[in-house]
Length: 544
Image (cartoon, rainbow, N blue to C red; front, side):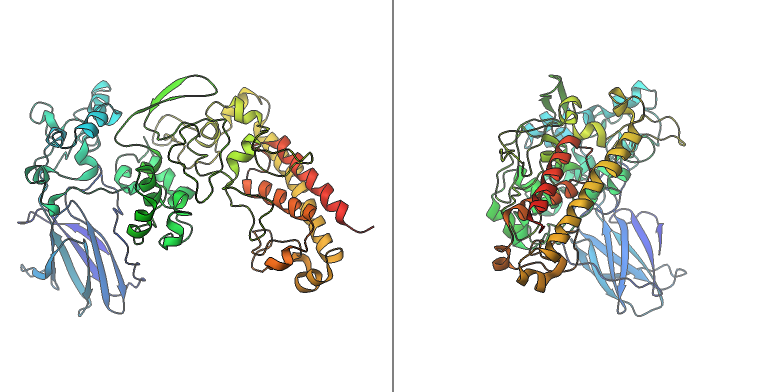
């Protein structure tokens, strides 16, 4: 497909899209549409064609832009000067077209952008306006002035409101009210809304899609969006729309559900109103507050940081978010641990292994079954990493680097991958990469393999006959086995009672260390203790 800009139109700028019947893709599920493209400046001020998909000679066209009505046009011959209206004015920014020709051109006309500046929002949104005015966004043009780039047309779209569009920023003298990043960068043109706040059609958009931020926070100078797109945060693992998942799984797997909870929306309302809009990943606005600055005192260093994070970067308190726990008031827990915790995992559960998120609890030594029977929740054994790396998860998983050149671009750390070991050298000067490899490949992974081998040995040689007969090597597993035994079933609820307690405790420790995913890096001594304890328990259950 090809996207081509055309001239002015009575509805504003229009775009043309060539629909070629030779392409064929599956139709998207009918969910609430979110911004799917990045545009310098944030929310597009003009309508922009975003895609065309085919199924059985029906094309689903989609476009994006500010709030308002859109009109689709079509023609089959570019030599013709006449565009024919297709359908009625559309508020949904999508439509289905039955294709009767081999080649069809489409274009869509939308509302002309009318920018007003944030002071037009002040009368009704005073508190948000006041808070946003103190963020770095409001000073975006000043950052250009400091480096003498405030006249650079390639920079201005992301440092002003509506630059390059009618009624948008022209200069600080001509349009001072549009200097800096303001409400309309993220919500779209708002002058029509300010003139008539009761007109629902003109109300600016509220969209937590990462693409809103990605229009500016991208590229070699600030590749935040590209890095985020490569991370697990950008993916919804399972369908979050069923009501049974929204309030439980959705609190960490759905950006819309989690943000609704953080905003104080009642659980019953979330379950009934987001059933068509829960498959939104963990986007920028879920962790960052676009409207306000927050001051966080680091519990490890005592340093106060002012930023737009919703939660601090370090904590030492115990935390385990069960599917029914209240988390929105836990400002004593670091931002990553809000989701990367064991979710109330206990060895007494037999239905399935611990969730793949015990990283904070492993780091703090507050999960697993110990040889002395002590309670990890009240007797933590934190790793040195938990206490000496003052920003904890961020310290290792979000390495940053300033822009040097196009060949040596900036790094913002939003892939959340440990790609550099410079921070490790403060304590591990010689060879931190080699130390990581040694701990993972020669200390923890061999223990994991030995523990599973001992469990397999117990299952095939020492387990109760009914378990051995029905499940063989899986006699030690959970009813729904984890990734160590994929694609099969384990003993059912009644048969789980036949598995000895030491075997259940051992398998719990096995999965805690395995699902942590760091293979000892988060808390090596604690992981060794959990695995050695588990190996000894299984050994005690093996026959002579």
